[in-house]
Length: 201
Image (cartoon, rainbow, N blue to C red; front, side, top):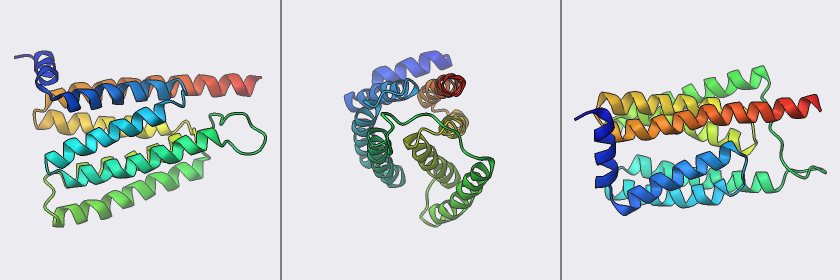
């Protein structure tokens, strides 16, 4: 069976809640690439469904991460609807170079600490979980503030997911994360173009 056939069979064999979570996740990311604020409530429903899936599978570290994402999405929703000052909307901006380095080092440090804890807790993929959790939260925080670098964070997270799932043969997730990766590139390009147009005008 080819990889594409495996992905298709995985979709057909998934439960309704898994299919709904997948569809909502893709829709939410696509809406985020277009700076549509409705991406936040849709994303919040998606992480609730994903948390239920992980709870049923006894993947409690992943379940806990969904709760963090829920809070981050709620925070992002508030940030986009309360841009501050006299601005009608929150505009796309970019981090200063020093801030980028600080966030990367902070993400790596958090990965090391969280990964070591997950090793002690018997997590089957502690470093993968720690990396995705650390940089996923950073990317979500950056997205809440409409920082262009948010998409670079999602690209790193999705690449990590593709690598791990390919290594263990979960090709359905490889396909899903590949779609997320493609949308991350689209999001980066669209946000960068929007920022460039605003700087010109």
